[in-house]
Image (cartoon, rainbow, N blue to C red):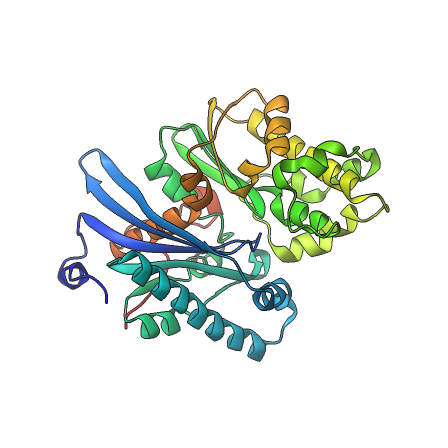
Length: 366
């Protein structure tokens, strides 16, 4: 099923053009993002095209499993890993057939089951060997593990793509389950996770029976609860410097208890969370050089949140077309797979805190 070009790769892994499907499943769990992309190495650097995209929402079964997987035993995690690999394979096969695509390989972020880098633990599920065998296409996945074993955070990984594909912007901000930022300080690329965004907002929205707060309308109508806002602002994570990353375990242990420390109406909780997120992001951006910010991720569709960030920030926030807003991470994980296939650096030590830049990801051949 894969293109004849991949056989050329086997002889010469420095092809100049690649057709890749990138797969992203984020912490907001709004679905599986697939992006069919082309990448071309030119004299002036890397060029990309984001050609076909599709989001497959998770059924309730998967939402329940992925929300609670960090509490499962090892045998059950292994079963879910294999089953999710089969599920990803079916989605990719549908995507390929529907759009008549000919990918050279698949590059998968998978879904983060555990992420505790301080303990040397990270696990992205959606088994790559299962996927490669089922699809008969090479698969690259498991991008975080090597960095964590080297002593790094294993995240964020998107900044390598920011560095090579979006260098016209001073800062790249993503508003997903968590917000993260990537920026240049001198000639060095730095990045870190800022705070929860959609993970918290969607949970608060669910209290009202809605999966999310369309355009931030409920938050706009609510009142800010100052004590909860102060408690959230005081979280120890926000005092850290250097490479740092967030995971669902941290959210459950540290953030959620502050959200619910006082019993308040859901719209007030949404208003308070939105203000906290806007304060954290604007404060973070104010410390960075440069003016032009590329903003992507599902949070861009929250008009009220974007208004609050802009009102508190002196930066120029740029929201691109809807396709790039929604599929930038899938695009970049496709690109990280290209760099892995070429055995070139795709993880920056300045970002993760690992002792050296390196090439990460596991290649599974059918």
